[in-house]
Length: 330
Image (tube, rainbow, N blue to C red; front, top):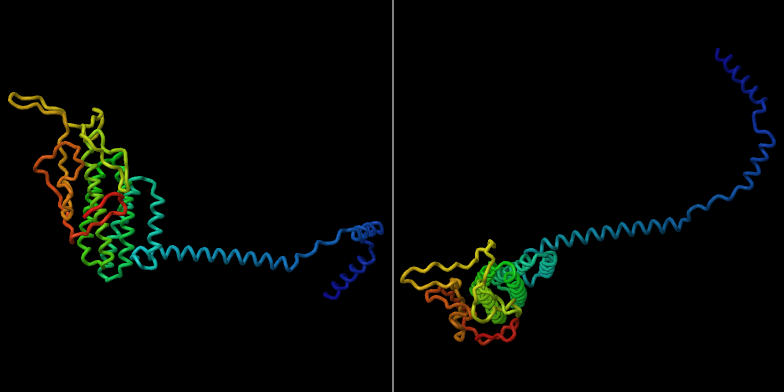
């Protein structure tokens, strides 16, 4: 059975072989001419080009890897620098990060408060440095940065408060007094050079408190500032404090008290604003400082007005305040 099938297959092959199933002579000639006149094949890609493309790809991958590594190291450095102290290798990164955060803050009040926050951080860092018996260089670095941020924060916040929100002035005064007390407590533990600089910084903080107090005392006056400014911000106006008139439809809480109808046997009451009840600030080691250091141009203060006294931890020599030209103490 299998032999018969094989014989049939051979017969079919023999029949196909005898058949002329290929192209005719004309078709063969046309195919030959097409092959002979065809353009040469394109040159294969050179090995040097392959190597050049491969090198560029490897360089791009390496550059991306290095960039990712630098970003990771930068992020780690920022995180580690949060607890850095003046004199530490990462303290510069900490200050750079703080300056960057200031650059990303566009609200005037928020930017001023950030400066004050950084200044308060320097006082806290000085306390830690004192516990570690650090050198004068680290303390001087902290004091210089404290002076810069405190003065800038005062300048920005007083400018904002006198034009937008006068309630920020008492807060600035209290902040400056709090830092003054902290630095005064720390003063005996500082090295000699840092202690001398701390005296100047304490006068700067006292001046900030005084400036905020003087401006706050004139918030109900028609003219609050003199139109001039210095390193600490706007200067309080001089002259008699005229009561500011407000819009009766305004929702402000500082509306002057209207005059009350007079009763028989009682003197008529004027519409002048009530005298300020905010405490004044005086510095004991400076005998030339007046007991009431407000501008002296506002309404007379009542005799029972409380007074804040700032005792210095040590008698100070005669010093000049470099950030406030023309002002000296001692």
